[in-house]
Length: 274
Image (cartoon, rainbow, N blue to C red; front, side, top):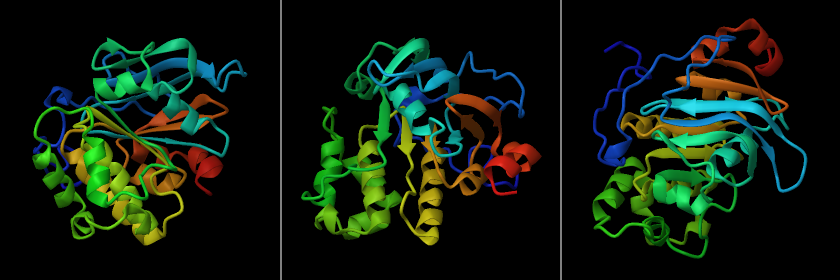
């Protein structure tokens, strides 16, 4: 294992919080500007073209993918189609061309609800908790598709987010923004997802809270769960990313490891403020 805590197994081989069927091997990420090797990716939105309803296409041959244990980050300017790409993978808009595959299965035609049953955990940017319910009730709602004893998973969520255990009987709507995001992520983890998708998880939180959330996201990835994340704080997100996708006008502009994209002069100049 290297000295880099963001590489290898991220220092933890415990995968019990994840669906064991989500296990797999890491593949090297391609370099900036090179063709993407995504044929065997665990989750892939492959050459997606589409938009909302009968409206114009927002995505144009857009490809994003992630493998077990990886954090893949989608970044780009406002209006680049970042969240649209995430929603396309989750089945919330029409993919007119291309496909979405999870663990080797084509799920392009499935509804978002069916994709949850297949192993997708999705945390939207807003309206992602039940504000009138307690923290624990929110987590219980996350286990709605399960028929087994989920108390062990809840204990793991509380280990990951200790503040939630402390506030488990408090209404979720009374929590801070960062704590609400922890509830939202925790509820998604209660499904024992094969893959976790986060849409702008640090939106509206302070830099300190952002760093804490990123630390927790890294811990989730250590369990083996692939994480696909849309993030406006591009530089900070790429610092923890195994794989990065820069979108511009719904198209792939740059692809590489987080380190490669951070070091790329054009990416720095155009998207990271120099």
